[in-house]
Length: 69
Image (cartoon, rainbow, N blue to C red):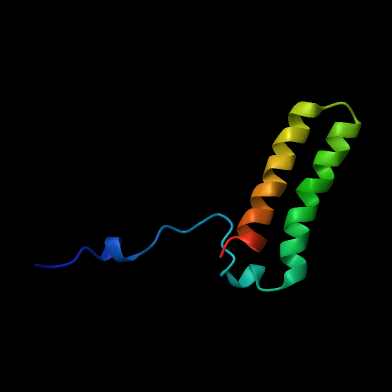
């Protein structure tokens, strides 16, 4: 019985901390800070819908790049 070669490969994640691009801490911090700053700007300019979207993106990036093990 042969194994399916596709079954051994894990599905790539959008924010993969193990990827070489995210090896430096400043890149991970910037990935969190940019949508966080955009969320703050949107909330102050009176666009709460976009603020929630960007705040969610910042929280997700923070979770994936700093808290998840």
